[in-house]
Image (cartoon, rainbow over the protein chains, first blue to last red):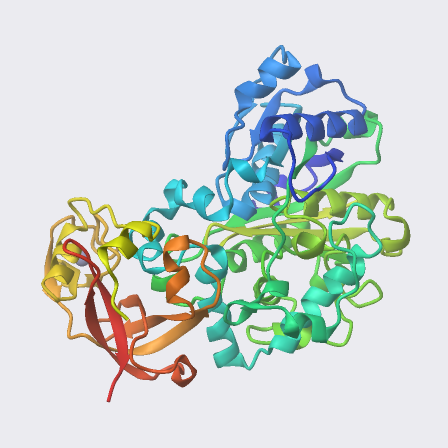
Length: 385
Length: 144
Ligand SMILES: [Zn+2]
C-alpha cells in the first residue's frame, strides 16, 4: 500500500500573515510578499533559502515574482494547485512530495488577496478556466456566485437528511465565538441564533451569516524536508497524512450524481490511513467554511459521522473550544477572514505549537485542516507536533 | 409593465453564452424551442453539458436528440441577492435543478408558480423564453 509514502516526510516550519482587512491599498503581490517574509522569518530562514514556490493558482502572482523580489538564487521547484479554496491544502501535498523526493528543501506556499478594485467574486470567477461550463450554461441564467452554486447542494442535504438552519447557525455562532478570542479576526461582535436568522437571505437556504467574508490580506507557510526541520527556529509540525480528492462532474454541480458529497470524501480515507490515526485522535480541526453548510458536509465526508448526520454533529457545543472536536479556532472564513483557507493552515500550525493564547485547545497534539473549492474539490492534511 | 428600448439601453448587459462547435446545437435548439441533448453515437448514452468524449466508451462521435421536456426537481435555490447587476430586477427568482427523463440534469428558472411549492421529486416540464432575437433560455413550470 503506497499510502504511507508521505507520512512525516515533511514539516511546516514557518507561518506568517499580514493584517486581515475589508479592503487595502496594497496589491496582491505586495501582500503575498509581506506574508511570505513573515513565514520565512518565523522559520528562521532567509529568503534565499527558499528553493520551491507554490503560489495561489487564482490571481496574478507567479513563481517568477519570488525570484525577482527575493533574489532567489536557485528556484528548483514551482507548481500550481488550481483548486480554489482547496488549493492551499493541496499545495501541502505537492510541497511534501517535492521535499520528500529531494527536489527542494524549503517550499513556500503563499496566498494573497488584494484590493476590492482588483475584482470581486463574480468577476474573478468568470475568468477561471475551470468555470467554463458554469459560465456557459448557468451564469447566463443568474447563477453567478458560489452562494448560488452551492445552495442547491445544501437544499438537497436538508431535504434528504433533515438538516436545519439552526444547525447552520450553530456553525456560524461557533466560529464567531472563537473569533472573539482572536485579535486578528475581522468579525468579533457576538452573534446569537436570532442574529443569524435575522440576517438577510442571499440564496436560499443561505443567509448573509451563512456566507464567508470578503477580505484583503495574505498568509504563507513554509514546508521543509523533515530531516531539515529540527535545525530551524520553531518546533516542527509534521505532515502525517495528506491527500486531495475530486468529485464526479467536477466542473458542474448540476450534473453531479450525488451533490451532497465532496471530493474530500475520496481524500479523507487516504490521509487518515497515511497518518495512521483515527478520528478520535484529532484534537482540533480547521474545516474550510466558505458557507456554514459546507462545514457540516465535510464533517460527514471526513468520516467524523455518517452522511446526513453532520447537522446533529455540530449541535450541543461539540465543535466549540471545549467540545469533543474544536473546529475553526481562529473564527474561520466566516469570522476571521477569507484568505482562501491559507489562514486555516496557519491556525492549525499555531494550535499544534501551543501559541494560541486564550483560544488554545489544551494539549493539542494532532490536528486536521481541510480545503474545499472549485465546485467541490477537496484536500485534507493531518498534522502533528 | 412594458419595457421600452430606453429601458433596455439602461439595463446592465446580461452574461451571454459563447457557444463553440460542441455546444452550438444546444443553443440553436433552444432558439427553435427544442431542448437538444448530446448523445454518444457509439453506445447511445445521453450526456450534458456537451463535451468531446463519451466517458463510458470513449467515442468522439455523437449526435443530438430532442429531450421530452419532462423531469422532477432534484434541488433548487431561491436567489434574493443579485451577484450580477443584470439579474437585480428579476429578484427574487428560483433556479431549479431538474432530473430530466433522459437521465441528465437541467438548471433553469422556475416560472408560473410560487417557489414555496418546490419539493424534491416535484414533476416539472420544460418551457422556453426568448430573451432577445438571438438568445432563448429554458425555464421550468410545475406540471399541471
Ligand atoms: Zn459512448
